[in-house]
Length: 153
Image 1 (cartoon, helix red, strand yellow):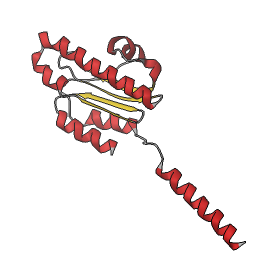
Image 2 (cartoon, rainbow, N blue to C red; image 1 turned 90 degrees about the vertical axis):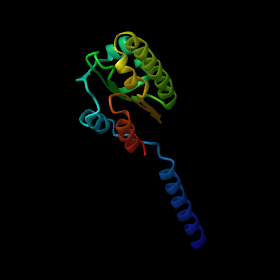
Image 3 (cartoon, one colour; image 1 turned 120 degrees about the vertical axis):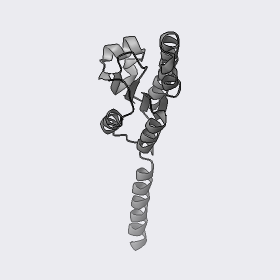
Image 4 (cartoon, helix red, strand yellow; image 1 turned 45 degrees about the vertical axis):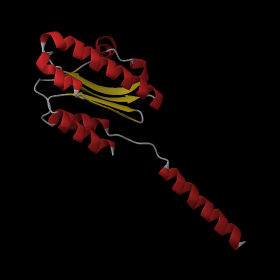
């Protein structure tokens, strides 16, 4: 009898310990977006954009996105940032590909009229972890990378 109780207890402990190890990554997206805004990374003034702008202008598949914060500058510097929560990890991988395409489009656009913006765009931070995608095109890319990395640990 004692062996059966002990066996059940050990199995219960094992199940709970395995379930805590397999937990998925959680990102405080609101806090990350707030930190990006306040970190003195941008030369330009950024403003939030709507879902229609994210879909039509930026070119992201909004049907893959559960939540987002996307801010774009005035157009003078090529600066913008996004913190995106996707519906699945597979969707996040697709959104990351679309962000890379966005980066290429920005580069091609700024190449002719604002070449001084090109390092900001080409050195942009683009990260994906789990269902999250982060994009930061800014003047201080090394600082942005450190900030993003601190949230993705």
